[in-house]
Figure 1 (cartoon, rainbow, N blue to C red):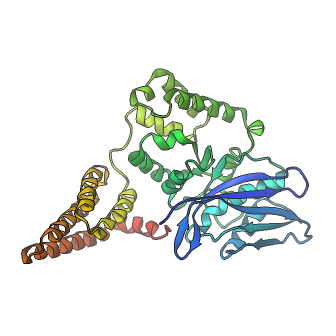
Figure 2: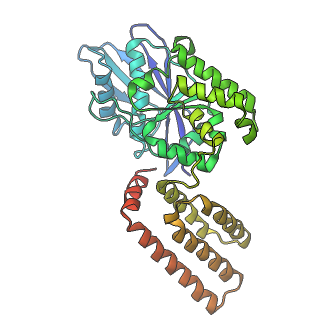
Length: 368
């Protein structure tokens, strides 16, 4: 089972400006034996007296992290003060880079004495060059956002480079993810820095945007209706939020729903991700489970990118042939099941030859 995990990054200032500036990071942790679990862990970045400014890393899984911490330390220009970073759990090797934004923000808080909001959670990859502060895309963002609900984070900071994933989440999940939390997109480290301070230290425009969006959530309630979302008072507040904070993705997505600008289909990447997960239905062996799976496949087809439809149809036919074969094994049904398997394999192979599919597959291969 693959799930997101909220990582708690704890930065303790050596000079005494702050005792515990906290930045949470959304990541995937390897719990051993190939399993990933969602839970709260801590990583401590502590300033230490060291004339050479060395970076020391401790914890059960430090492979791949030392260089990332050194780059972050150089980016924050800590001078001669050393840094000790403790990683509490085994970081999944395919998700290690997504720790970059949390590490950089924690070390920046450490260097500048910034008290951070413990309700903020971040995820993002930064380039290897210390002078490049762009925030790059991460893997499995939709899963991380879903898993973060109920984890104590009220504001999520995610890469603008993952905008396609956010739109896919809008198509699959509708209103709920955007009302559960404030979700912001950022394109660089500076944009992220202004989102993490404690409320009393934040930019006044940011606090006003958060207040207005809070009013929207109150008006809509726990079971929002589309008519409520389209009420003039709600629309005015959402437009004002975006005027104050253009990166407020939650307001942006709710406006898209209200103004009927929601895409009809998933992106090609999102469609392939759904196709990969849907193939698990072929492991079912009971007729009732297969019947329910067939109904779900039929409903999901409507949101798929059209390029995937032929393969999806072949998967539905394959499942139906297997269900009929299990109900009454005959030579004719066995032949039809084999034909359905062959048709699915052929159509999937044809799809995988498309250059745009190969590019999307390369990204999917990097996901845990």
